[in-house]
Length: 221
Length: 303
Image (tube, rainbow over all chains, first blue to last red):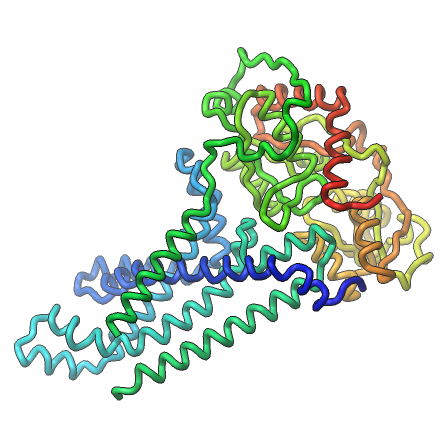
């Protein structure tokens, strides 16, 4: 049935490469800004102020409880409908906005979990030595929490690499989008296998890197 | 460790900026490559009575259109991401005739209609055919025909079933796939399912046509309904796996609605009437047929 997988790959590999670069880039931007935003959300969530904590919790639940594709649609079509002046903004920003917000919800839970996982005795010891709450958090808790957080962030990046495939729905150049490009040439099934293979290789390599990082971070344990 | 973190941070910042710098500002005529504007005469458009959306387009100086670039030669994308196709040339011609810049937003097929409805774009050109329910929801332009040869709309089947189907009647009780909200969906509903609603004919709708083609190769369905031209291309590409049926849907029952139409938001009559004038002019001069032939060649579609 037409051309083989290898034949298609050899003919169009620059296209797949460009798609892969797009995928890694979108995932990177999403996780980077998602981490910054997620850290803020986690701090709100952990704060003693009940209202702030509740707001953060609702934020996380809404973003984790709705599909990313729906969030992208809302960001892309309905934000400009509410504020027509925003229509001139390139679509990549809407899609990235959805990816970042979505990622921030997951990252905030990673950070919150990482901080909570540090034994309460550490806080008690620090405070009884006369450290302020801020001091205790930055000098005692966070350095330990980071060991839990970093590998989990790596995993979030791996998950995000796959999530960005939804950006292809909006014709942004990433791996899944190469499917649309090749369907224009009536190549239907071959790209699916090539794309799956590339995703698999990339996620395996990334998992391996996260594993290395985990090992490195556990040296002092 | 600190040094490493610094490097990572610097690298990440660079990547982020690079990712954000890729958007194109509509300061220049981005789509000048579509056709040689000087070659084509433009109609004199009376915009003194412009209302609503048309007035808005003229004052902001851009015509923003949506398209799903997965339907060559009407609209498709090159490997480098440039959008091409006969309908894009027509959209450019419409923008040029109005004296405004064209901006093309690409998205999936269903998205193009959402985009028109939500005012994200001014119009959509995406290979739409005329449909009664579509006309209820949108302002539709007059039809424009690129094909001098009439390919019609047909069904393709696995090569093993060749000769099994003689008329639309034979598809009763079969499992057929078609693209959601496409013309072919309507044809299957009106001309196969309606023949005998109790025959158990199954119409499975898919988001993009390639899913239907995959379905046919996987034996998930008995036939795929699609336009005759695309059908020929898929059958050629399959190298003997699929076959044409040469059974065509009857289009006479839908009246005078040949070719493709463009969409605008319901109620934007001032816009659609003006666009119709421009499309009519391009059709009368034979421009659209010329663009279509050109786009076919450029897209590498063989006769």
